[in-house]
Image (cartoon, rainbow, N blue to C red; front, side, top):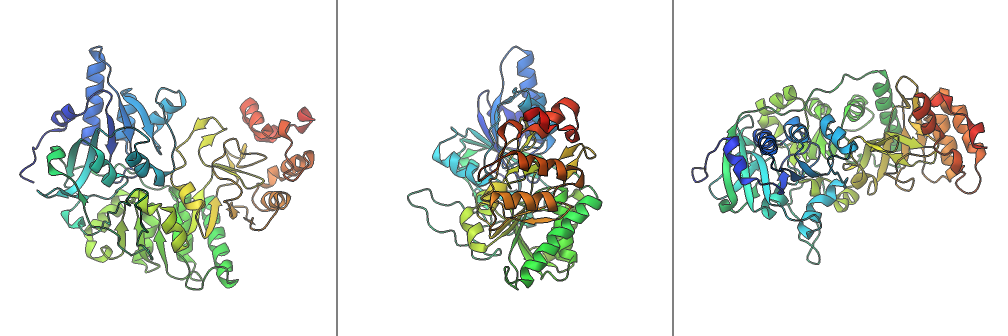
Length: 497
């Protein structure tokens, strides 16, 4: 590493200019740089105070820590942003249309950059555990789009973070598919297969600066499991056990993909506790706390993902026992962790979270009341469309019981009824396979809707006709009632007759 210039974060941002398109390493806060983006936000504020414009286009793996999305949003320094995000200040900037945002399937981003669909990548800011003089970068705990932005960028800034041990070398599988018409099959046939090399190789001449840091990840702890999330987890586990007994899932079981967040963590915990589910493997985006606990309990034997999205306490536990985890965890670029070819080949059981579902099985993952972006579609579409069996989970109600997550028609459409096999809430399970729209509606209302909303939903079903019996004037009546009264119970169908 002696050949690279060592700089402070403030010195390194001289290589980022107004109007640049900048790529960031990491996936969730895991693996994201922190010191350089914060210095970049300060540079933006200083330039703007002088009357000079300063903003950048941003490509990330998924959501990031506050040091990227929060500081740059508060500095009004975002020209555009893609894909997934979860920072409150960025979310506010997006919903006020200050920060232009376009949502993307996560598996599409790296190839869209290579194809030139999204413009040039001027610079990449990468967190690394180590870097060699020959240009081999060892990522930390999240990969994201790192290989692609490093190859495409004119300039690379490395945050060398000593919180992450150099001995992480070997826990990554870095592979980029060739672009059409030269693309070949991805040689992954089980979650533990390796397709590439354990490092990101770059041209050393592109590395403009190395910034030495020692900063923890910005991920928080998971919310403790409550009665609702525990019941959702139990319902998922029970459903999968019955599918094995019925012979619709092989007795040896299949790899699991689970989305981000507290419900996903609770679902994995419930699966681990249910000894009728065999020891299983994970092929997913984010490896969360529950997976690490299940590895220690010998309920999960291997996990392939794009990031270790765990609490800092659990991260310390992993790093303290790397010899145990080294042959049980593999981190890949999101283009591979989310690749439709691999998902279909491995036969993943996919479990993702909905904001709302309608009575015909369509899913809204992204927009509150149809207009306000929450986080983004993430990888849920990548997995859902290509799953062996696709499951969506959601609590049946929110805001006490003033919001029903089961509605007549979703207010924003992310996943269609054609891709959704199973819907599960704390109320129960709706198996939608091989059902007509009316049959789906009856199963979802009876099994997944909160009891306080079942009759309202049945009454809506009576208003429509045709193969999918919508009453278009009334299809968003739940949302209108909430906008007017903050309570979906106050839906009045007579207004629409």
